[in-house]
Image (tube, rainbow, N blue to C red; front, side):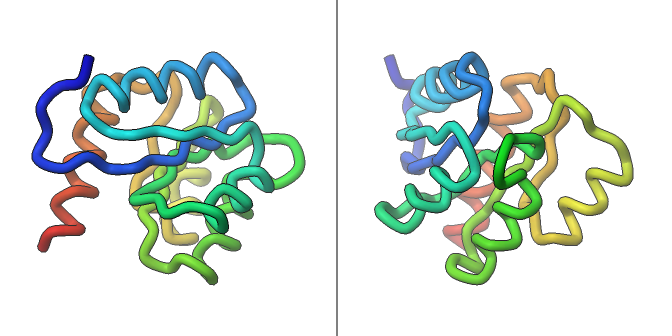
Length: 129
């Protein structure tokens, strides 16, 4: 079941943990958005090449291409794509690195679902203003 929203966003979830991907996809769907997922950074970049997304939620620690590298690479091709970095290993230094690399937001795991809801509202607002 979807909640009524003004606009549905299409979100890419990139995380190597299946439970995190699944949980975020379910919650985003509940909020009225559409969600796809990728299990690592390289798969996430391929997904961005093959489809249009309004935003991406990306784990910072993944095998292969990590979240900061994903963010840096995606900035060259999709400079306006809002990317939300999530991590279970957050520190002020990590947050600062992500924000300087161009992250739209930074959320520490375990995040609260109202944080995700607020970030989606901010993305919607930024696209309509």
